[in-house]
Length: 329
Figure (tube, rainbow, N blue to C red):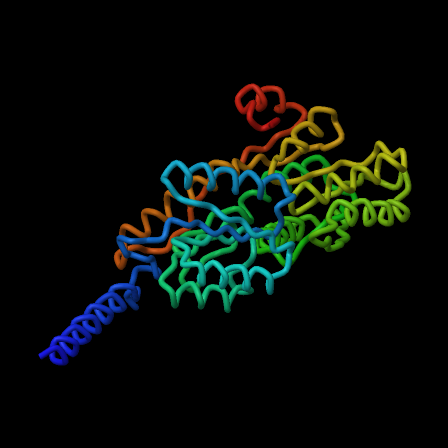
């Protein structure tokens, strides 16, 4: 009798274990692979291409504030421009059972292993400018649209002729898209000569200064209209340091993202123009949109969410700061 009771107890325990296991496996057909479990682990894992860039920091700030307000924990990994490290970080968040994972800037095409692991675990991924892809529920439109105002301003300022040094970064999808638009727009202006150098992460400030110094050696004062364009403004800010060391005042400078340092540089006249990107709002939008994807489950359709940029120049910086005092923080 005691033996029969023991066998019956084991059978009940085994049945319960099987039931629990079945409940923990995400459905294969979840919408854009959103985790629809009501017991979602409230951990947001953020993998950033660089934690030292001001706008990456703003996105992290916005996402963290929104997540914590909703009772979530947040962990951030700085992959320092290395896609292999980003894949490893995503896989580690999968092992921790994160409820959602954010990719900041890395192209989804370079995150195959990480995205596959997240999809297999039913964990939704959102990207900041990384594009849509395997298991990605949303992305932000931070690439080409943000490059257009600054590039348009550059073309207008050169007024039909001159030389441009373009500082690029092809590991990040955002910069790839911005460079592609820059190329397309400048193709219509063959009178403007373009040279390019690709910067590194980390090291973009130093690279910007180095490349600008070398480029200006071949473009002495009086050799025509000159400009430096960065796919985001930090390389341009590095270039400005080199320009200042050379005592040059004949070089126009353009950036994108609108960090507080960049806005101040527009105020003091060392940066000709930048495009302000509200990273805090984008980070918060990523979190709330991914929450919507989790709730929607199989009905969710992956999408791109646009947060428009604002061109800031010497003519508009005063009114811009009055409207956006947080931009100087």
